[in-house]
Image (cartoon, rainbow, N blue to C red; front, top):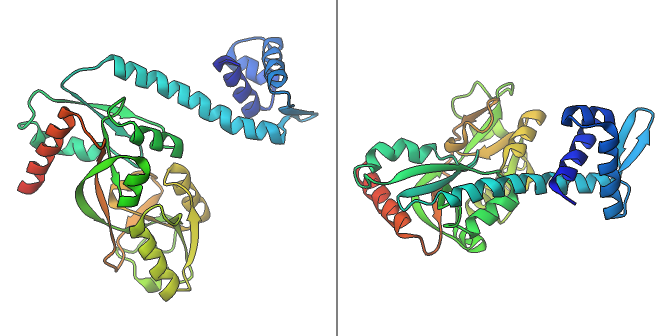
Length: 298
């Protein structure tokens, strides 16, 4: 099975039609059908049900669709990572960026960092923010990406096999849809949250959020807690779609344009820093030292 067949399968699944997929791919319908038949033969399962309304995925097809989408994204990402690796330069620092690991923080500091590292250059490396990609990148710091910025705790670093340089304690905020009744508030009280559904990342993802979770469950039973598995665009989409609230920080304020990040009357924070390899390269060490000097002067 090759990438062309995977891409054809995804097109057919998205469009529910051999003809529409063929038109979009600029190939003939028989060629599309031949590729789908080849995929089904190799997997030894039926991927589609043919109905008078079009093609519908079978249960096996739905399962394979998720994997095929990931595989295709992973392959495209691997190509970009290979290109990045081919452009090695002793004075280039590769910074991974995604909605949840925004590189803007470091870009804003660059004018102050540059005098310490006049020969150093930044290279921003976008990556798909999925659980699989995040783990792979953090466990392989120094290969295609040198560092990312993000929230952390000791268990998280141990699980990912990486290290971090602490930068700040970020206040925990709540993001609300702009159409929500609380969107006009400048600061939220615990009474404001009564009766609302608050989305929190799964337990054991970060101990600092678990502290908030336990306090809310114990002291504020009127707040409904809804758990999600991973901080990504999908979680924020669900928050907006269902008119719920979600725990967040100011540095994630641009993840979703229809959510407003609002402070809460509490003192909860979460550590924020630069994640990197346990044994960082000389370039990364120089950069971390420069960052430390810049922050000390602020």
